[in-house]
Image 1 (cartoon, helix red, strand yellow):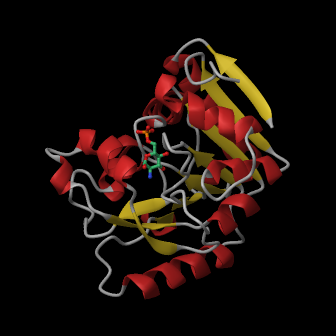
Image 2: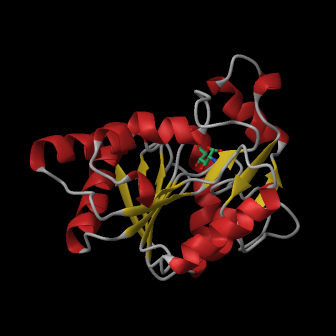
Length: 241
Ligand code: GLP
């Protein structure tokens, strides 16, 4: 694991955008695995700037998002479809056909998960995976549990995640209780992984990710098994390592 500790959120975002841009320039048809949440917002805004001012070219880039709330359609302001278009896709030259996000409105969610998994495999897997981390050590929506699923699946969100994510909704009741998430398989098979974390609320999860025992109760600890993981942390997130 390579760990960069930077002073502030903004520095984390700039450094992360530079690494994504490097990947995009090195392999212009890269498959990027993308994350949502508040953490990567600054990185996306920097990438948009790089596209607008430096012609960073996404025309052959393919993307797979980690997850989506079950029950939220693309027009719902808290859906990850909405988020991704608002923060990135609307502002860059990516082709709509190259964007993949699990379908929160799928009539048959299990089939949608299987199809999603197949598409990842058909595209050759993820070249560069961007991750945030939940306060409980979840990645994507792979929640702490007695076992973890390797493939894309429907997951029940934990109380903590519902509570943490309720800040984006009008009330806790409105937070969907289920989601579709990429499993640990394609994440760990990604050629490179970049994990971002900011703020003290992530410090315990980061400590476990870096040096804790590998356990399904903290899914991010599995990153210890991957040969090419980069962590970019601000000082608060790094305070326990
Ligand atoms: C959600 C997402 C995760 C994300 C996490 C952290 O639960 N499913 O992919 O990493 O939130 O979010 P934030 O960056 O807002 O702290």
